[in-house]
Image (cartoon, rainbow, N blue to C red; front, side, top):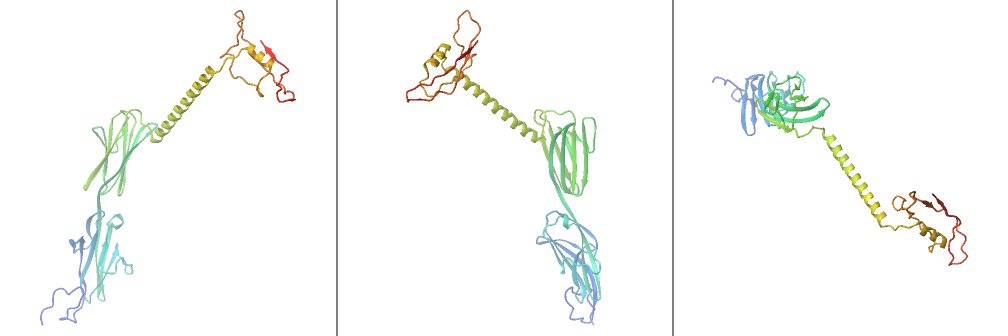
Length: 329
């Protein structure tokens, strides 16, 4: 009899040796990126770095007779665990933080089972959020955040100077923290601010770096909301001032164009009666149009008319008469 091959086929029984049976062995994982094989895993609990957003296909194979049932699990599966895939193929179309961790392939037939595990390690270059600054009572406060894996380091540059992490003195304070996959940093400036000063935040890890800058404008920096409210308030004051000036100009123009009526003319008009059905009322003040007085008199005269109810009209051409005229000095 010819010697038996070292390994049986993973999905069929060798017809030359129908009575030979094997438990699953030589379990392996092949990793496909696109249309190419990236790596073949032969040992248990291997680590694989994967770029975030990449598509992967994991193929599990095993030698056994009868053919083994292949299944995929998250983590280390218990005997009765529910698989995430009941075939030897596991598709990961877009690797992200949710896919990071351990995946286990189990090959099982009536003679036994064997597992192999792979741990995905998701990596990504920094993504920067910020920097952003706001005015506070004690000065200017800026914040910056970055998402990456491995976790990025954040650092600040004030002008051309590089600031150390978690640094503090009388004029500034830098504090940093991280919670995978985020890193956060804040900068507080209490003094030394000047217009045209550049402030930048840099994030970097082994897969790349990013930076963002802000420029301090001339004048005292203020929150954006304060600038908007100040602009609206200034516009409102300008409109109101223009309206007041326009009204004053119109009033003075109308006063200059109105005729001046003397006290004698007024008395004569009252004595003879008005030709109109309704009497006329003058709005000019004594200060603007004084009544004619003698040169020896320096005190102005003021007069007012008290109108009484006119007598009933007996005919169409009758005039309204007034019963009383009072003149005060």
